[in-house]
Amino acid sequence: MAMTQANWHTWHDAYDDPDSWQSRRLVTVRERIRTALDEAPPGPLTVLAMVAGQGRDVIPEVAAHPRRHDVTARLVELDPENTDAARAAVRAAGLSNVEVITGDAAFTDHYAGLAPADLLLICGLFVHIADEDVLRVVRHLPALVKRGGRVIWTRDLGEPNLVPEICDWFADEGFEKVFETGPEFTHAVFEHRSLRGSVPLPAATTLFTFVGIRKLRPWAYPST
Image 1 (cartoon, helix red, strand yellow):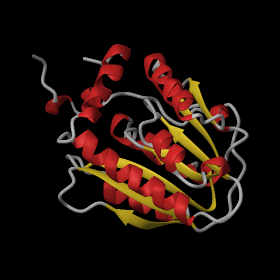
Image 2 (cartoon, helix red, strand yellow; image 1 turned 120 degrees about the vertical axis):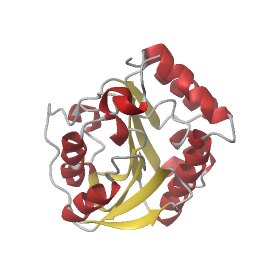
Image 3 (cartoon, one colour; image 1 turned 180 degrees about the vertical axis):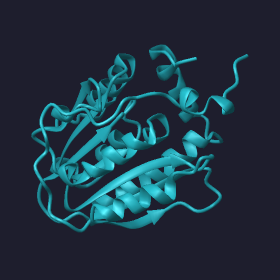
Image 4 (cartoon, one colour; image 1 turned 60 degrees about the vertical axis):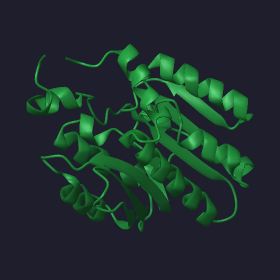
C-alpha cells in the first residue's frame, strides 16, 4: 500500500522517540550538518535539501550555528503538511534566509539560483527510488554541489544493499567519502565531498520518480 500524505506527516512523529532509528539517524545527520558549517570557508553559504520533510535536520542546526546569517537555505518537500510544519519552524527560529518549497524534489528547477551549493542533503530518498534513479541523482551532483561542497545522504542497509555501488558512483563523479556511520547503524549516514568543479544545472529535468519502499521491496512489507 502506498503511503499517503497524511501518513508521511505522521511518520515524522517517530523523531520524538529517542529510541527510534529515525531519531538516532537524525542526531547523526545534525552532527554532520554542524561540522559542515563549522568547516566551511568564510563567506556566504548555500544549503539545499531534497525531500526535506519538516526540516528537523537543517532548521535547528542553522538556527543555532554562529554562522546562521551566512547561510541561505532552500528545503524542497512535496507533502504540504510537512512544509507547513517546516515553515512554522523557520518562523519560530527567525530564519528569514531559509526558504521552504512545496513541490517535487525531483524537479531541477526548484534548485535553480542556489545550485551549486556548499551543502546538499539527500536524507530518506534513496531507499524509495529505483536503483537507476539513484544513479541518475548521483550523476547530477556536480550540478548541485560546488567544488569542496558536501553531500550528506542516508540509506538503510537492508537487502539488497546498494550502498557499495552508490559510493562507487559518488567516486565516479569526483566525490570522496569523508564520513560514514558504523555497523551498529542499520539506517546509515554518509558524507561525501566534491573534488571537482561544478557543471551547469539542467533546466526542467526530472531526476527521479518516488516509488516507495513498499513497492520496491514488497517481500519486506507483506499485505495484512
